[in-house]
Image (tube, rainbow, N blue to C red; front, side, top):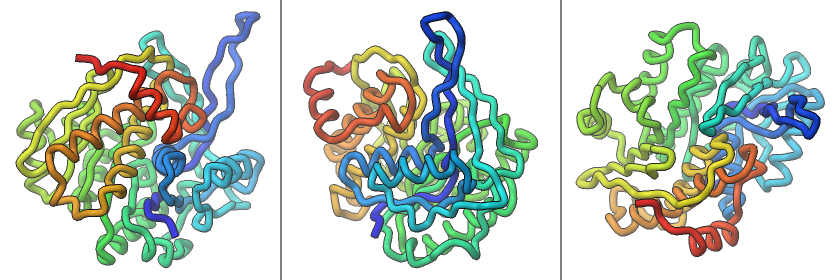
Length: 321
């Protein structure tokens, strides 16, 4: 049984590295935002699982092994003999941000069908998490929306990351329309400042937050990189600084943040509408530490810490003010 169950892409990140001879080579790692979130939470001790599809190829088998090794339940992961695994080539810029090239035409993750999903996995979870990349094409779009609708009907907490990757959409207009169409199901939203503006069409933060809370979203996590995060809920809007650590690679940092946040939410064992300001503060600092720690190393899943590493990190690093 997975307390945190995600649906969506599991893919290969091929990150550009420079060898001693000055030549560029690409290091293979497991990636995909929903997979990153559940791997982070699993590393902290949560029971997690992933629903998705990869190719029945060397990459797909590698990805399944990574999830198995991380103790993420793969009962919902399908190995597809007809489609290949998605590849993402990633180049890090000098500021720690990234450029992407995706090989994702007719790949396995986009071929996930609702009829292939074992709904009993959803029945047993507490939090059902999804992102926007599985909404970019059919049949994975319908599979994702139908799974979210089913999870909502079963009283699950719905968390959502409208992960903005413009290269994967036919147009900006289609992206906005699709990414906002699912907001009515969402209880917990994780966004960057750019994504917040994109899905609300509000130029400033407070009206954007008010609009989303007015739609019924209960918790909004706005990630701000080195500035930390803002948590908004009914009666609370607060910024929490992150930790003073040297950033090497921001890949997966936002997903680590959210995996840590959802882990802490489960730990509270209470209705999300009853969380106090002190509890939000504790959750935010912990989640910031997860994101900050991951940014100090290369890669997403390989860089993610466990509970002991996070405790040590938080004790050894000061907060940025």
